[in-house]
Length: 549
Image 1: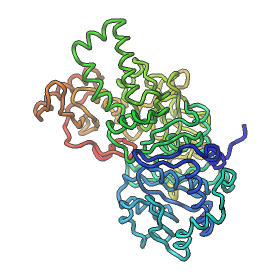
Image 2: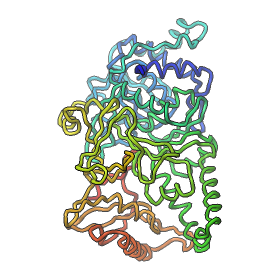
Image 3: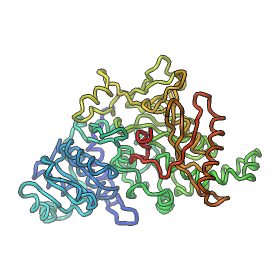
Image 4: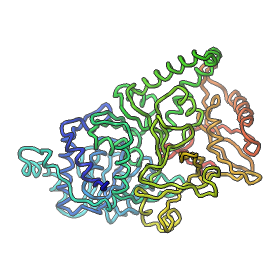
């Protein structure tokens, strides 16, 4: 099959759904696809006049919004390079990214604009307000007048308004660079992942062929659009089908997310494990632990009825009409996964990384296997760097169409991650089953070497601990050759009210004993420490482990 052109494919999605609702801000205004196209055309007029074209770098800094989406589309459909910046980054990191990338144009919301030091950014030519597209800063001549008169220029060119046939885009090869996506930087300064249009097209093609979404469906986008997971599957893929996408701002609380789902009733849901695990531990687990519920769940037939009822209630809390919930960004807690599978909840777990834009493996909910993260997508080949990839854990390596070209201006990082024959070392550890489903065991840099040379994966211990009473989240680390666990506790219980610190410490000791009874001797935890605040996380809600070693 001939490779489809990414820019033409996305433009067709906009053109073919002209009068449908496209992008909405949650509890805010909506753009039709026609209005999205008009704004893109206006920007392309400005860009063309000022020679902002293929290879020019356009940075976007702000929370998810319909204007963020329009700006991104105006950028990539112009053949320019998108530099999406996660709004969680610190001011110094943002300044470094703008400088390191050589950004030409910046779109930014008012809250972040005061932190931009233009004096240290010689490549920067203009800054636009992401809230209303007004010009905040320009270096050079003519841009202010061009922006001020763009509506008049547009009306002169299209006196009868923009028609679908008028919405044309430049010829952009899939070999061109589409983005420099700076990672969340869990181990220091972020690296700029360079991906081309071909990588995005491979992800888009796979989504269109394998994910259950149809034209006109509704999407709630709450994952950061500046991250490739949310960008690819909450935004670009639905746009090509003419879906109506509602954007939440910064990742809100589970309560706000569920409120939006119940109002909008999305057809496909992209999730990170943290949100689903919180719903399980705070809403479902306390009920499942009640003595009478335990008795009923042990009775055949009765337990099936209860599971069916829980499934129905949980599904309705997500709007009730989704075809599948796709979980990615981190591993799902095994206990949560096993329970969801038991009640026949329609979910799957995929595996991806920014370096693959992002998809690496996936399987739909009907073929999903407990503990697995699907099978390699058809644009990639995957191997395990071990003597026996079916029994011995090793580093996961991938090669194919959607693998990054390089880390921008970082030869050492590129050479460390990409082999001479094109294999990407993911840094993740895994093993295959006989059908080539991938089972991820953890990050190679997180692995702890046991006293007799055993490999200890802290994520596996944390997964067990996180489902125990009064535990919200945990980090297991090594100190003086012994394993300790740090826990952010939940002091509120349904039966006992608010627990004191002494009560929590007593419960944690009970948890430690129970945990160790489920672990081999070389994985035993010697102590559990309480922490006062949630662990600091990356924008995709992975704990910054390096802060807690």
